[in-house]
Image 1: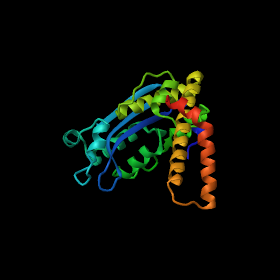
Image 2: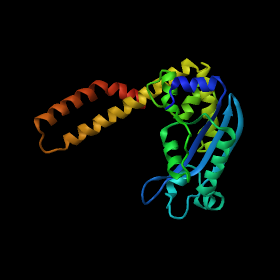
Image 3: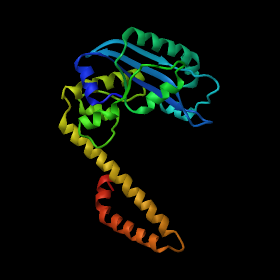
Image 4: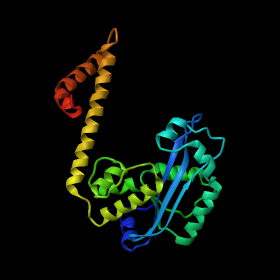
Length: 249
């Protein structure tokens, strides 16, 4: 399995790397995700050798959740008409793999890798997958897994996430290049971390308030529940002003 040093070595030596992204939709019956689009940027150093961008239609056996599909900017009618079956997509990916022999396939998060492996119609033997989340937070000394858009902000890369997988793959490649050469803006990094600190604090406050209100609604409490309730009261009281400042109330 690849480690940080081997990734850095591959990029420094300008070996070919494939950055990829999948867009997916929830299936209404099983609630599993189904790929609807894929984008890959094959790169050597900072140069894109080739790109791959396609809509995917996995078949009528999958009942895509319309609300989710529309939320990410796709329509079932369009996927039916222009989406390619995974057999064809698999053929394209294997042909490109033979042509460019990527050292790694890099995505932001394991979900893209797992989804690709589940739907691809041939076993990708010898393909080395790597999750950028294993590299980027540590390299930037971040304690959170942040979004692609926020990584782009830290690197000064103009990017708005629009659920276009090739755009996402190319952006990830630029982020990797920026971070590896030490070009990230540390002031922006601190700004993003503070932003996530606030999000985590607000979520924690709301969870404790919900737990407190649940206990408050019970007719009777055990000694352990009473102790928890006192703890919640102290936390909510002690952090109320900070919470109101975060949410702007």
